[in-house]
Length: 191
Image 1 (tube, rainbow, N blue to C red):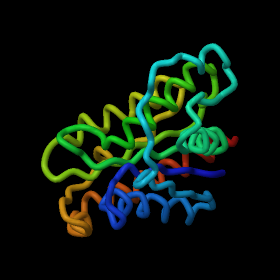
Image 2 (cartoon, one colour):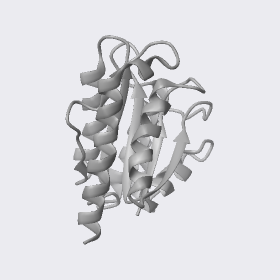
Image 3 (cartoon, one colour):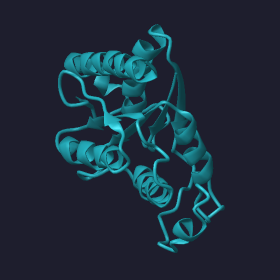
Image 4 (cartoon, rainbow, N blue to C red):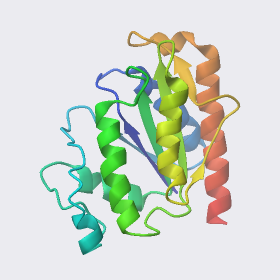
């Protein structure tokens, strides 16, 4: 079993990355392999709405000037997908939005590509916006017949400066429970 996580933070040492690492510890303790994909510095561009993915239906975006198709392959090859983003003005980061829009259109064009995978969203927020960011990323999972994994509280933690989430004991516990729940679901899906 494998889970790939996409970290949409622009920071190298990000609160979002710290939260994902807490989820990963629980997954790895339960025998699930993990891979972290930072979107920082990838220069993902937004969707151009060329609709070539619907015409070709080959499982890829026709724009080949960035890493989107590599990321689509990682999604396709994983049993679970984690999308992580800080709340930027109450929304996902630019990189996460590009990933969701473009990978999402490819998945719409290639029915069943992500069907029955487990998906979880992780959000780091200063004060507000976490609910909208969770909804944006969870909508990605619901569009493709994926199973959205929750925790014992919304999958978020509070932090502004790098490392601030370390002070949010409840947020870190939420990530640990999320990792446990994701491992449980993956085990059930593997049957």
